[in-house]
Length: 386
Image (cartoon, rainbow, N blue to C red; front, side, top):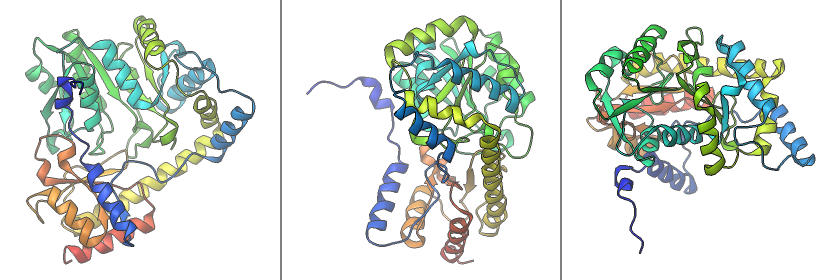
């Protein structure tokens, strides 16, 4: 058999998938499961997007596009960045990608030499660190705490930066915690990275789903900050695999060269369909859905506290609650399986997200209907004896 690359040993399994497989097996046996695990909106692509995809198919718009995306979509994204997040971005800096995952893979390939180190918060979305590993780099997880909103700080950048460090990847709002970095704190962090001639990648895929403060993009911090965004979360186009990067002007040609070789182009049909996301009518529907997510969060937070599921930092974005379950069990992984088997509620143990006290936490996704979330609360109330 061919020998696998040694770096694969540093890529851990996505543990939640085993839990989800067990949930599917229970459903096949007839058990009703309330899913609060996978981070996928229960809303799907809006009707105008579906219609635009059908029209593109009928018109034969399925051929290769430019590697960086069709010009109309790049211009529409730039206008969206300006209108929604208040920062003007030149369309020439926008590179359309095969989802946010494709964007991060492209960025890591472009920016990392073998052995280069990237600082990231712990806990964090696991795939982000694996993109670094796959590109030949080394992801260094920096333990965070509720006091820092589970986010990397400028002080931690100073403390952990080494001769091998090339840059940082931060997510605001974050998966799994749903917390964002305060604008001033992010500016301080970027300033420290800039002083060390490093790169700063800011994952903003949940920025559209922010609830408690103005949605401010890190694009305001300077053209050297690299942004990642996606059509999966705010626009509810998960399986369409479409996202984008905003890169410094001087790096556009290098990123384009890589995209030409690695992916040829993003999905042509998905790109033409995504143009329908930017009409006033579409934006009104997306905002209404955002309010629905906010209502679900606001329902769950007091209920979780009542159940003894302490939420140390109020999530202000995305659709996740990172709850401290240590009052009920010393091992969140074992608790997750008990909760699934005995209560029919599927949540994600902290072990998927890093090494900072993962046994204390479960991540609950509220990307499910309010009715189903109410059912989950009722079941957990019986399970925890409250």
